[in-house]
Each structure stands twice: as structure tokens, then as C-alpha cells.
Image (cartoon, rainbow, N blue to C red; front, top):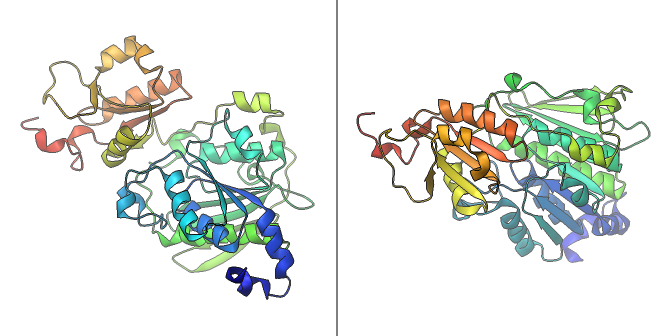
Length: 366
């Protein structure tokens, strides 16, 4: 095709490399700051089949780095919206939408269909889960990660002496060691750089071009514009932490939260309650606490009631809790997470006193 002629005239790539890309099936986990640039350049390069796995919806705070999306996309599901945008730009690409968060229960069936996995997730639990499953399924995995001004890139389960994520970071950090998810911050260009590097390694690996970044961990520092690599050898001890079969993998709990409980902003909470099925936005303040709220979409279930009767949450997948200041909802979210490890349970940071709360204007004298 004329669209790819600038690639096919390249030495060492040619039509043979293009045909390999056309036959390839790549899964991108996460359509966020890393996933958006990866998806865009994989589709532009002519990868034949691309899967997009993400259960989140688009919020305004995403737009500085998730460049596939715009203001009119706020509130829409990320995976489906990304697929629609890419399909309009590149109609020949076969796009598979997986509009859910991957879990030990659903991930094996999803990953089995693909030749290569790109991990663009933004939490340690998913990162370890995807790594362990790729080891079990013997799937090559390209990991990208960012923290403040630094990005990391590695290729796992590929080459003569393949490494995996646990060869670098053997065990997940403790919850107390993880910074608050909403406070770490990011300049949008950094995940763009790392996401593009993930796409570059994918194109090389699939087409046979050049030397893939095997047995190395690549670092990039935005402040200094510096790149450097660290050599990584396989560690025989690392595989002992990986489930030995799919049955034990499905039973393993990979949940790791930021602090006592994972927090969520008011903006995202309202996005989720409006746009995600099986979501419940719950005011856990006790009866008589002021002000009384009549905001549509809010269900009032006092904390004392939820502690005694959790059956009200059994059919709910996304539980969004708030109180006056956010302290009680954080404690309750942590307790409920122990009871329902498979559910997404969040505390709304700052409660109704938070300045960004749309309910704040209703509060007088509290």
C-alpha cells in the first residue's frame, strides 16, 4: 500500500517486514498516557490486529497526556473511544475492544489470542499480574513505566536468556511505600516518549528489525534528557514467586492500593457513576449529619449500616464512597476491600469539604 511505502523502501525492513506487521496481533493493556502513543504508532505502522484493554473512562485530567482524546470525549469509555478514533484514521487495522480491567480471572483468555503484549498500566498490581501471566503463556512483553520525571522501558520473555519483571523488582512494594496515586503528577510528554519507545520495540520485535532491548532496563530522565541502560540477568529465584499454572494464577491476589485505600477524584467518581455499569456512589455519613444532599445518582448508606450489611454491595463492581472529609470513607474502603478483593472500591479524596467537590457549594456552617 502507498501508505507504507516510506517504510518498505528502508533497507532491512522492506515488504517482508511490512508483511510481518500485517500478520501480527498485539494487545495494549491500558489506553492511557503510555497506551495512547503506542496505539497510534502501532496502527500507523500497519500492525494487523490490535487489542485495547481498559475499563476506565476519560476524565479531563487525562487530556494532558492521553493524546488520542479531546474535550468532547470526557466521560466516554477509553478502550472503545480509542478504537473508534484509530479505526477512522486507519480503517484497515482490525481493532478488538476489551472494555474492562484485566484480572487474574479474565486475563488468560484475553492474552492467549495475541503474539505480543504491551503493558501501559499505571499500577503495580496490574504490572506484576501481566508479567506473571506472560511468563506462564510464554508471551513477549514490553513494559513501560513512569514516575514523576523518569521513565523506564524493558522487553521481557524474549531472546536466548529471557528476563521478566521480577528479575528487576522481585516483589511488589508494600502499600505504605506507594505514593498517593493522585499526587505523583506527570508532564504529558514523558509517557508520550516512553509509549513511543514501546511501539518502536514492538515494531522491531515483530518485523525482525535491528536489535531488541533484551536483558536491559532503559531509563530516561526528562529533566536531564539523559538515557542510560542497566544490564539485567535472569534470576532463578524470581520464578518461585510466579504461579506455576493458570489455576493458581487465577487464585492469586494482585491487588495493591496506594496507602490504606485507593483514592479517586470527584470528577472521576461522577464520570464512573454515570458511565460505568454496576457502579454505586455512596454517601456513608450517618443519619442526621448535615448538609442533607439531594444530588441525583447518590445513594445514602451510613457507614454503620454497611459494616453490618455488605449484601447491598454484592452485585456492584465499582464502589465509590464519600463522607465529610474523606477520612471515614478511606478507612471503610480499606475494610471493604479485604471483604471484596475482586471489586473496585474507592474513597473520594477530601470528601464533600474538598474545594473541587461539586457538592461543596451546598455546604453551609459545617
